[in-house]
Image (cartoon, rainbow, N blue to C red):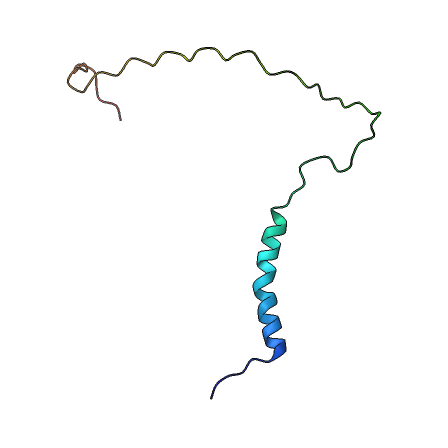
Length: 79
């Protein structure tokens, strides 16, 4: 005998699958900006600065560490 799903069972099954996905999607929709559009005449306390000047040259690469054979043998090994 084959089980038949009723309309209510299909809707319930659909909603049980949809609800977690909808909650996860809504949880990721955090509003990060202002909650309202400010009036045009109100100044913001934020000072917008121009970009910094050109970045300084990168530091030279550190000297390569000596191989195991070149390390001093009189020093105790680290833990």
